[in-house]
Length: 286
Ligand SMILES: C[S@@+](CC[C@H](N)C(=O)[O-])C[C@H]1O[C@@H](n2cnc3c(N)ncnc32)[C@H](O)[C@@H]1O
Image (tube, rainbow, N blue to C red; front, side, top):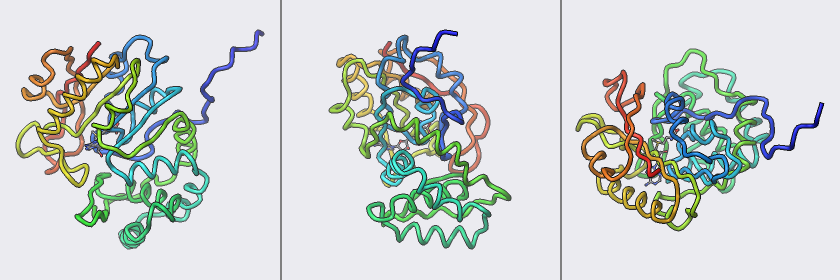
């Protein structure tokens, strides 16, 4: 048998996948998104400026990537999983054997008292524990930046999956990970990058608000600024793909680009209604 040619990617024990739940996560849309990637994408750097759970990044497991998000706690957790996964797993072990509200609120207090600079892996473990056991996997902080989501009602949540964390860690080694707002992309993106933009969505109705991802919401002015970034990256020679809700405001912003519709099963919104399928648009400049 001839020896297979070496590949840049390491064979993983578990397929890389998001290790946190994230509102707006693209997991269930991947079968519809993958066919929309540009041809030759495997040679391009994968750039995701609204990484959240980074479902598309993990599905692709690219050779080079730039991941960013405005949420600093999320970004620090990714860096710890990439750089110090054994310590994260060791710290998560003792938290993971059961879930009850008393433990949840004690961990939440300890997490809010911890600092990314000194408590790195332990704080990342607490972030993962809270994400798996809080109400609906939400991430919400108060004005002081303290995580304040109540406990979720789970009988037996899977809190520690060490094979999945190790696979995620290996996949992330190809990635530069930065905390930043999406506008910094203009300075970082290079011609030939593939850029996937999955911002907080424009609400479908005035009651269905998806704007509580970060301390400051994401309003129509942000959507317009993002469109300007999309256009600037287009001029610069990046291949851009963007997801958003299928509403006239978004269709109008991107009317000069190619627009496809995909159907998303949507599980979370602010008032618990609106479950079922929701149409989303995928905008592309190629
Ligand atoms: C729809 S989620 C992304 C979901 C992700 N594609 C996934 O698969 O899980 C949107 C993300 O945008 C981030 N975000 C909100 N405002 C931002 C901004 N101004 N710049 C960069 N990221 C922002 C949020 O923290 C959140 O993680």
